[in-house]
Length: 140
Image 1 (cartoon, rainbow, N blue to C red):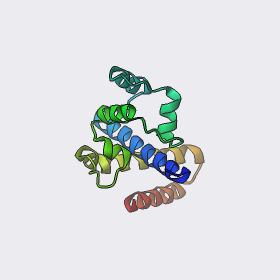
Image 2: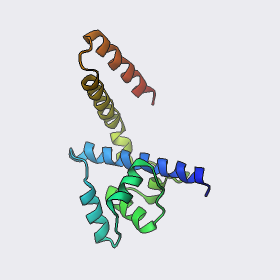
Image 3: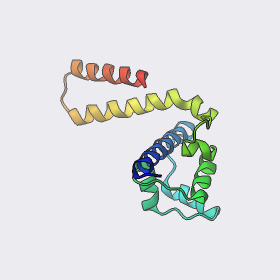
């Protein structure tokens, strides 16, 4: 695997992990913590350091350790090939079922952040920003 392939695989894994974290939020109302994930993996004989988890979820390094990958797949109740983005791996039904809600949640977070960051913005400008974000979210 070349360095570019490694980087691309790391970013793809990060996208899938963030998606699965969002699915967990949609299902339970709370994001799984690093401590919960690490404890689950440890019960399966895998050690996940906080820095390694951060690298994985942010797409900075591609982790190939099958014990970690299999453990994360089990934690999120998905197949390892999906988690790794293998060609032909089906998207889990629970992910498909939550995808619209996840998009809406992500759009709401962006809108909330924009509103807080921009401070005193006219209602008209805020509506224009919201409309733009809604259109962008429906295209993806």
